[in-house]
Length: 158
Image (cartoon, rainbow, N blue to C red):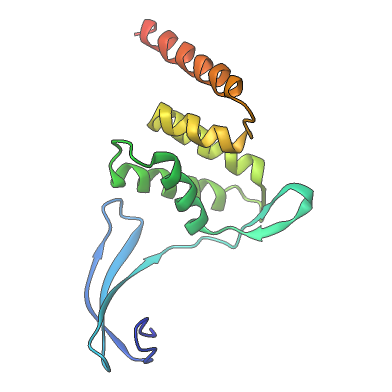
């Protein structure tokens, strides 16, 4: 693996261990040339999946983009990184095991919405505001009140 600091082609693995959710391997590496240390992650990729966006644009599914979207929605919330990583890995597994090589972005968005709804209501509303393209405060109010009604109904089901 190429060193990100000096671009030397030979690095050595110093330590390997599974991540907390056992979906990847974390490797500590050291460059043979400059001595810099860095971390890489090795993940299983079941298949190449293309996300079909609006206007029939197509992009290769990238876990990094999913991580960024969810991290933004969960920013400054009291949610452990482990729970966020489990959510991301679960969505990635769903995408890769659909049996289709192409997944509509709307289906991916709904997977994220479902996961965030169970994880944190504020993160859910934040993501929904972008995903559903809220344009004014009333959109937030209506969506937030529907989330609150569902949460309240869930309390009475216990």
